[in-house]
Amino acid sequence: MLTEPIKIALVDDHRLFRSGIVSLISNFKGYSILFEASDGEDLIRKISPKNKPDIILLDINMPGMDGISTAQWLRNNYPEVCVIVLSMFEDAEKVLAMVRIGVKGYLLKDAEPQEFENALKRVAGGEVYYPEFVTRHLINSFNESTPDIKLNGRELEFLRLAGTELTYKEIADQMCVSARTVDGYRDQLFEKLQIKSRVGLVLYAIKNKMIEL
Amino acid sequence: MLTEPIKIALVDDHRLFRSGIVSLISNFKGYSILFEASDGEDLIRKISPKNKPDIILLDINMPGMDGISTAQWLRNNYPEVCVIVLSMFEDAEKVLAMVRIGVKGYLLKDAEPQEFENALKRVAGGEVYYPEFVTRHLINSFNESTPDIKLNGRELEFLRLAGTELTYKEIADQMCVSARTVDGYRDQLFEKLQIKSRVGLVLYAIKNKMIEL
DNA sequence: AAAAAAATACCCATAACACGGTATTTTTCA
DNA sequence: TGAAAAATACCGTGTTATGGGTATTTTTTT
Image (cartoon, rainbow over all chains, first blue to last red; front, side, top):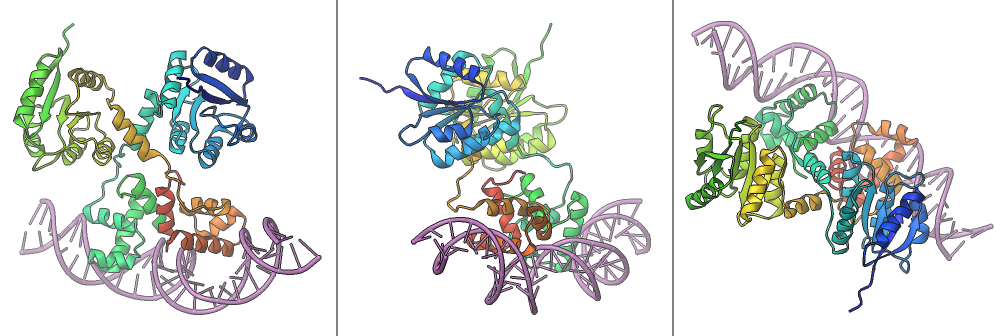
C-alpha cells in the first residue's frame, strides 16, 4: 500500500531557519515540503485549493502579516489545514491567542528534533500536540481567580442579575426590593470594585467567573 | 535525611473503593493515610489545621455534600491542600468545573496503578496531573467558536469598544466617526445578533471570544 | 456613467443609568 | 434594652442609551 506523504508548508521570515527545518524534515519518513513562505501574505499568494498543504508550520513574529493574523485567515479560509506554531514565544498571551484560534500544535524553536517529529506525527494523525507549558497556561487561565473583595449574598445576587439584559427596574422586581435599593447595591459595588458603569460590572463578574456565559 | 511522608486523605462514599485505594497506596513509598471520609461533610468534621493532609483524593458523586462543593470549600478554607479528583466522570462539564476550582489532578477510577502513582508524585512535587482527555476538554472549551454571523471590520471594532466602559460618544471619538454613526453600528448589531442592550453586546462579544478580559 | 448598496450621519423623544445627597427600617452587638 | 451598623429606600437632576424614522455621502456594481 502506497501512502501519500504529508504535505507541509513552512511560514517563517528567516530563510536559514526554514532551510534548517526543511533539512530536518527530509530525515523524517512520510513528509514532503510543498512550499515555503516568508510571511502571511506570501502564504496567501502561494496557497490554493490545488496547492494546499496538510500541515503548516507557522512562526508568530514576522514583519508584514504576522502569525496570529495568518492563523485566523487560515481558519477562515482553509479550516481543514492543520497549523503547528513554531515560535520563540512561551508567554501566555501568545500561546492562548493561538490556542484560541485553534492551532493543532505549538512548539518552541528550541524543541528537540524528536519532539518535533512526534508533534508532526500526532498532528498528522488528527491529534493535537501541546507541550507542558502550553497546558499550564491553559489551566492557569481557566482557574477561577479568588477575588480579594468579599461581596455579601445580596451584592452577589445583584451582580449576577446585572450581567443580564434586565433593566435595574426588572432586577428590583426579581429581587423583590425597590428600584432604589438596587441603586444602592449598584453604588456599593461601584465603590467597592472601583467601577463606574454597568458594563464594568458585567466585565468584573465575568472576569471573576461569577456568571456563566 | 528523613523525609516526611505525604499525608493523604480519601473522600469517597464507597468503603470498598476506599479500602482498595488505601491498600494500593500502602505499596507506594513515601505516603501515609491521614484519614478517610465518606463525603464532604464528613471531611469537614475531620480536617483541622492540626489534622491536615497534603493531598486529598476526592470523588465527585457522593450523596450529601458532593465533590464539587467540597472542592470549593477546600479552596476557600485550605487553599494549600492539593486535591486530586478520583472520578468515574469523563464528561466536560464535571471536568471543567473541577479544573476551574483549581484541583491539581484528575483521574478516572479505572486508571492504572502506575498512572495513579505518577499523579501522586507529580502533585506531591507541586505540579498538576491531567490526563489527555482533560486537556482535550480544556482545549475544546477554549477554542473560539466561529459565529455563524459575519461582522465587517467596523462592526467588529465597534463591538470590541462596546465591551469597555467607554460611552458611545467616547467610542465615536475613538473611531473618528460621529456619534450617530455609532448609533447606526449599534442598531445594526442589535438587529443582526438579536440583542437589545449594551450588556447583550458585551455578553455576545465575550461569549464569542471577540474581546479579552 | 448611472443605479444600487453600503456606510455614515441627522432628528426628536423617551427610557435607563449614574450621581450626590438624605431618611427609615431592620439587624446586630454590647 | 438601647445604640450602632447594615440594609433598604427616598429625592431630584443630569447624562447616556435606546428607538423609530429620514437624509446624505461614499463605494460598489451593472
